[in-house]
Image 1 (cartoon, protein in one colour):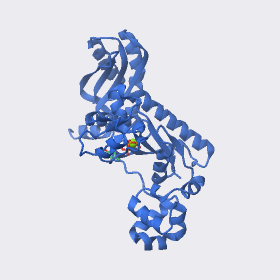
Image 2: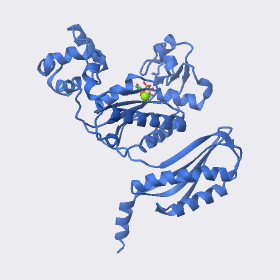
Image 3: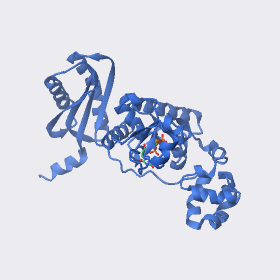
Length: 360
Ligand code: TTP
Ligand code: MG
């Protein structure tokens, strides 16, 4: 059986707003509700304690949480953070299905020959998820929740289980026992209205629906819906991952414990990072044309410096020299808090070779 991860960023838009304005940390932040007739995009967990949630009207949110801090939303920043997180998780697998701006499925079956019923396989998967969460937090300041299971339906359920900053495994042998007592609203695809309707005829839990059998369920909710829902109630979901996420860059960055002013120290930091991202690039048979150095100074101002080569390459010497030249040309303005290197403008090595053949 496969090993699938589902990740989902915690309170995504609200968490980004806190990064953009650290004075919001720990406060009830509500995104999207600046106009009275508007609706809430999301709320920080502090605001959720007052009952505020996505899609609620602003007027209602103001009533429930008058001390809430309403912010308009910074969509460009959300996109940047989203891209960065998808790039981090793609360091762990080449099969990534992007579901939305802040969530996706990862095919992780390569972690073990055994399925998640094997304690060692489950531990390896958990350890990998911890590393992933750590990297996301270190490099972006955001937290994600990860669910691990043997299909998409259960992996998504698992990522929601311990939110925020959660990590939860649903192994095959424990899936049914976990599913059965859940209220039917927890099953993705069942709306509130349908759930209420089923409640009225005495059906409250997954077990209640499952024990009806598919035929009776079809009688209640319709044949096509029952065909989709019934297997899920039994922990079965045959949907494969569809990968329409294509990685656009390979990068690595770090925040120093103590700010750095010495360029040779910066270079020493960047060299192993370039090696690392180049190895990833080569493993995927890709070539890069542009190298970018990102610097964040101690006042949090951020600068990127790029150099584009005449040809896309995966050659260490060429990229190493480009990085050294680029770093030399940068006049440091202040002590450096964060530095990183990224390769972008990617092309497929095989395609490149084929197009070269066209010339003969
Ligand atoms: P979600 O992942 O559903 O919510 P979230 O990330 O804010 O909180 P959590 O995952 O911890 O429960 O959605 C991701 C982002 O999508 C969310 O931050 C804002 C946006 N969004 C809307 O704009 N409107 C909506 O109705 C929903 C559900 C989300
Ligand atoms: Mg989320």
